[in-house]
Amino acid sequence: MVYLGGAHPSSTCEKCGNADRIRVAVPSRFWFARGSGKLEHNANVKWCWDLYGVSVDVGVEAVEVNRRISIEWPTPVEWIFTPRPDGGTYVRITASGRVGSDDEVAQALDSMGGFSLALEGCKPFLEHGIELNLVMDHSPDTHVEGGA
Image 1 (cartoon, rainbow, N blue to C red):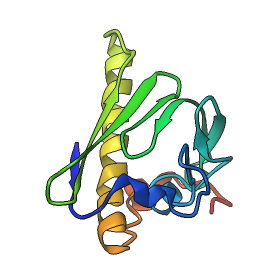
Image 2 (image 1 turned 180 degrees about the vertical axis):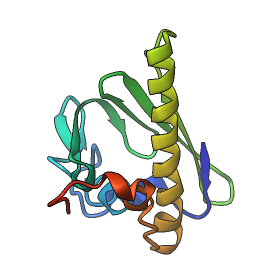
Image 3 (image 1 turned 135 degrees about the horizontal axis):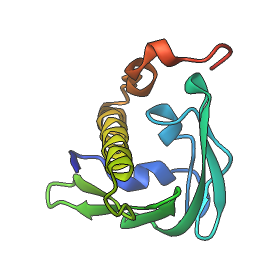
């Protein structure tokens, strides 16, 4: 969970031309390196972390601009955006679908860390236009050769 002071999730939709799609250009400034397309209802996209040689297929379940994004990657993940009276936005991310084996608990903790890192990069980018490069700096010793 994070509070975005003065920033609104619609910032990710500027110039996308459709209220039901989210531009990939904004998250690529603070989270993944690139994506194969816009987030829109029932789309299938690929998000790539080129520096680490990792990609993930993402199924988009729902996009409700300024309210909610729901995806599968491979488990369900939902972002809820709640407007605040001061013009900011409260963001809550819920990742579900893990049942509790040691492996799944480790994966859940890793996912929580990844989403926290993404939110930590999102906040200064949306509020001040600052790119912290947190994902790139997170594990510099694991970068792959030729990664962007």
